[in-house]
Image (cartoon, rainbow, N blue to C red):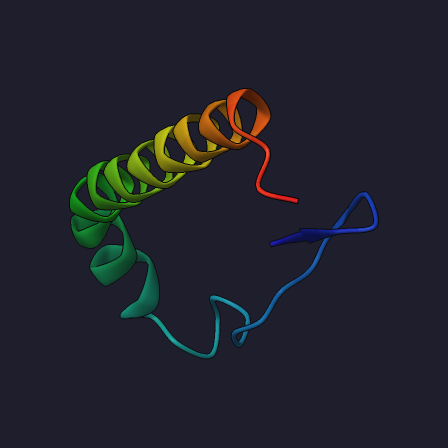
Length: 59
């Protein structure tokens, strides 16, 4: 994760856990596709709701 412009490491360094990079690389494409679909649908929902609210103000 990048927090404040600096990459932060949440897990142990690679020297301490040799199985981390291979498992992470094997899961990465599926995770990327899933997160992309999730964020895309969520963003589309927000845009549609915002357009509806601006056309029909309730308050």
